[in-house]
Image (cartoon, rainbow, N blue to C red; front, side):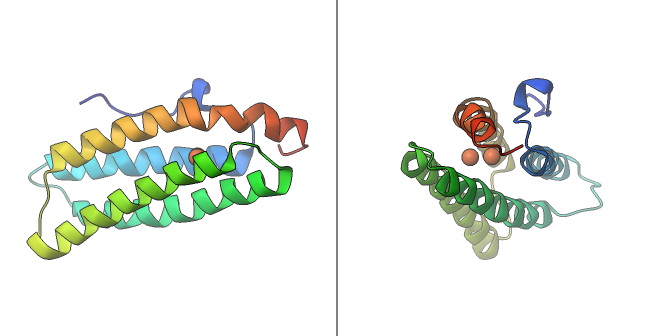
Length: 135
Ligand SMILES: [Fe+2]
Ligand SMILES: [Fe+2]
């Protein structure tokens, strides 16, 4: 599995968003690490919960800024956020029910989802936010 790291290519230029993205990628990485290491000091579900917390506030922040600035693609973007959140809830429910999950599958899904979303969907609002003085 490729390690997900924040790079300059991810930069939006809005500090609150860049910090959220860095925290989200670190949390996905921590989830994967804790799933892989037998002697891990943390349980993967802790990182899954942290990811849900970060993603919840981060998605609300982006959608609020999109609304404030009249970003035309807000509906499609918000659907992507909702879909990811539903997946996170599904994984969490699985943990509650079975006490475990297919960490490789979940880690792979999260890595691909965030890699694509941060470099594609989120980059699409960058110029729009800057043009509206959001920095
Ligand atoms: Fe984002
Ligand atoms: Fe987004």
